[in-house]
Every structure is written in structure tokens, then in C-alpha cells.
Amino acid sequence: MKLQSSGPDWSLTSDLEFVTDALGEVWAELKHARLFMTGGTGFIGCWLLEALRQADRKLGLGVTRHGADAGSGRLPPQGPAPRKL
Image (cartoon, rainbow, N blue to C red):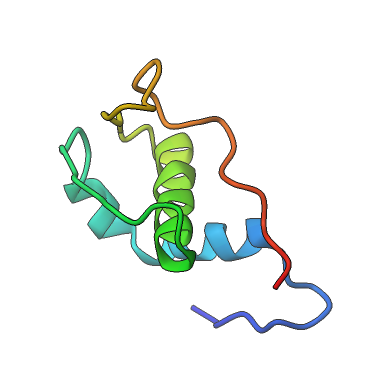
């Protein structure tokens, strides 16, 4: 699998597709798993949650979230907007 660069063809969607495809076996092990994750508003946590949301949408993992802001329990339809540094 070819690594992607940050060139003119880069996009968040292409990165997430790459991660979803590259971790195929890992995602299968997480199907209907219960995960506890903290730090979801930080840089790394935001990317991890977005990758998990993408994999759930593409592979039907049945991922749910729990917590004070969980609402319906499903992962949000769109992750946080990228922030300019």
C-alpha cells in the first residue's frame, strides 16, 4: 500500500480511507467492542475518533459512544472541523 503525501492531492477523506483500508484486520476485531477513550478533543484524539467514525460508517462496526455528551449513542455523522494553527 502506497503512503500518501501532503501534496496537492491530499485530503482528509483520502487519509481516512487509507487508515480504514490499512487497518482492516484491526477494525474487524473492534466490531461491537466497547472502547473507553479520553482526550477526544485533542489533536491525536480527534484523529482517532474521526478514523473510528469513518471505519464504522464504511464497515458497519456497530460502534456506539457513551458519556455526558453522547446523545443518541451513535458516533456523530461528521467529526470536528479542522482547526487552523
